[in-house]
Image 1 (cartoon, rainbow, N blue to C red):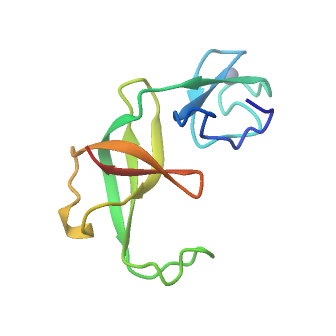
Image 2 (image 1 turned 60 degrees about the horizontal axis):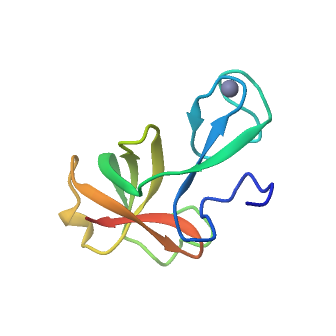
Length: 118
Ligand SMILES: [Zn+2]
């Protein structure tokens, strides 16, 4: 891994999550400093890529540059069995098919983690 704290993806395609070297907590989204203890030193750990939709919203009008014109799309918080809750878009099914509790697996689009039905 490089020192880039925004990297989500290991060279082998695994999803990686930051773990703080100060308090040992995992965090997501990648932060320049630990939200709990302020440490700026992290290591990146691979996780399985499995998750479960915790909650989601269907975006019909995006204000995010780069996503305008892609609506409707699903923005979700996904619980990982390995620990943290992570944010990402759900792809690979119609927005109306997404459900709370739906099992998903990570997939990468433009090197960013997205989630598709497992
Ligand atoms: Zn910490």
